[in-house]
Image 1 (cartoon, rainbow, N blue to C red):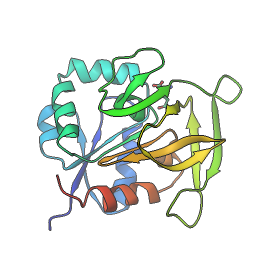
Image 2 (image 1 turned 120 degrees about the vertical axis):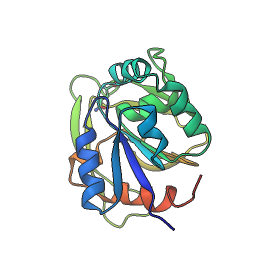
Image 3 (image 1 turned 60 degrees about the vertical axis):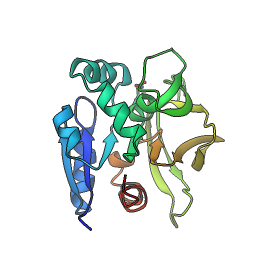
Image 4 (image 1 turned 180 degrees about the vertical axis):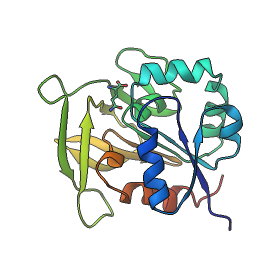
Length: 192
Ligand code: GLN
């Protein structure tokens, strides 16, 4: 089997950090900036950043329909922070997301005091906790039928459903490689 090639949506946000995690794990990867790029990847990471800006750029580059179609046909996708918001189907401020995942999220939900913070997060299936960096993170207010893989302060912070994985924190900024490895090894080997 040819190793899957994981794309990183590179319109805005911390895509470079995701690419460097994939690279250091020895996985095939590439930046995705157009529908043509999307056609040649097997899986996609949607990075953190600013979901409103990212969604504007998705529309400007006419990628919305192609992204929705690929997700619906089973392409594995990992969204971190803003990337999780982009995937969700209900957002507190009514933002027009891709809406491909039955998830309700509230943007910037930790308030001013805890806008950005770090915490050690125990994750199902991993022996040691993950260092979670939260930056103006959303809260998943309804995970629907998704599987919750990690919580912090009683809130789901890492969830999965079928081909989809979302974190409200940034493993790629913490030198943390295990979640990316889990994504590629568990979700990307299922084939589309
Ligand atoms: N606050 C950003 C948003 O609402 C997400 C922040 C992040 O990705 N770290 O889109």
